[in-house]
Amino acid sequence: MSTGGALSPGGTSWRHQIRDPQVGVALVAAVCLLVEAVIAKNVIDAELNFFSQFAPIWIFVAYQVSGLRDRTSEIAFITAIVLATAAILVLYAV
Image 1 (cartoon, rainbow, N blue to C red):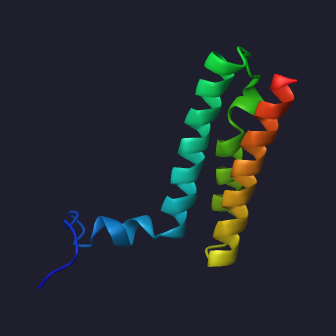
Image 2 (cartoon, rainbow, N blue to C red; image 1 turned 120 degrees about the vertical axis):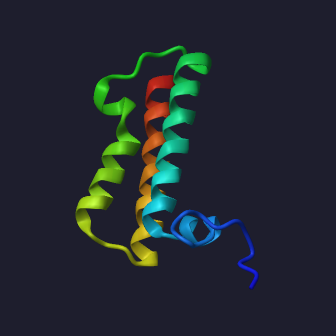
C-alpha cells in the first residue's frame, strides 16, 4: 500500500496534514512573520512596535477563535495575513 509520502506517527502523510486549513494558515503566518522581521531589520532598518511586529500572529489567533474551517475562510485569512504584513512594511518604509 503506497501512501505517496512518509507517514507521520499518526499514520497520515505530511501532504495530507499540510492541507489542513489550520496548518496552511499557520505556515503562512510563520513565513510572513519571518519575512516581516528580516525586511524590517535588514532592508528598511526599522524597529516595529509590539502590535505591528506580531500582526500575522494576531490574525492567526482571530482565525483560530472564529472556528471557520472552510476553504473560503482559509483563503480570506491567508489574504489578510499577507496584506497586513505588506501594509505594515510599507507604512514603516515611508
